[in-house]
Image (cartoon, rainbow, N blue to C red):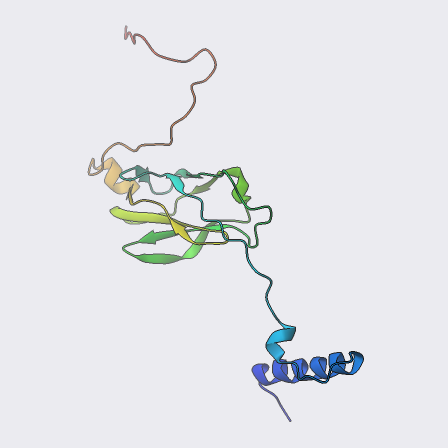
Length: 170
């Protein structure tokens, strides 16, 4: 006799429940869901800080997703990953995965996609949350000057390079 996967799981649960009830002093029946009960998850939905609303990114280039990492739970239940979303639909590939949500940022290459101003990132950990909408310009559109100049996350100035006062061409 061949069992379907769901029937096999149920059969194993019933066997396990029977073994458990014979070792305890209880005569109650055990439901399979009691055996495979999930642990409660810590829910933490950090706010995405960059890309901010209206930011401009270029496909094929490196991107840093930045979020507010203050007050994380002691234990983050799931692994983290990032998806690209456009027009309310997520693309079926993962841009970054297995990073520490407590770090507050992750860097990854943007895929080669069509230009558009309706992109967002989905940051998954214990809760899926979306970045604000931003623009991605394809390299083709960038070379044909159809896209504005890209913006980036705020960066701290390098040591000794806090400002440029004058640029002189000879």
